[in-house]
Image (cartoon, rainbow, N blue to C red; front, side, top):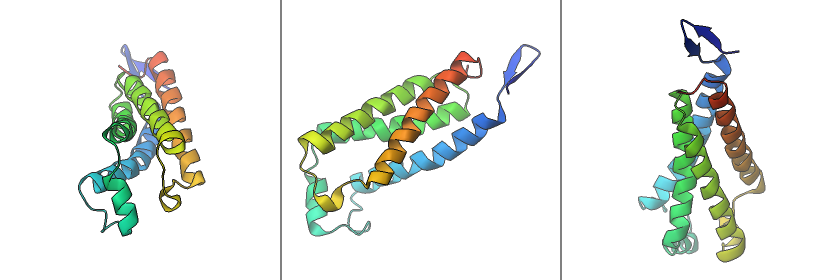
Length: 145
């Protein structure tokens, strides 16, 4: 539970735990994004057909992917900094996740060997939605400044 000392709200212990765990989780998305954008596709073990798919990835899909991973990463950092800006960052992350999901399922012809595993997909959705919900609750509780 958050406590108040001399007019200042202290962050509850769970904020540090949630912020740290989600920062580590969201770092995986950043590593994946940067690896593909910095041309490290062969080093990631991608086949020539997978590399061709990633090199043909449309700019708009890259933009929504960036919104998702960078928004989520920023949301975790801002949560640890106790910034009220964690909420809009997580809203951007959710918009990016919705865009990527739509791109993968409706618009792009993603090769079967490039599809996100269902367990990872569920985890990404769960963490993103939880972090948005959590950031809103912490803002309403006065923990985020």
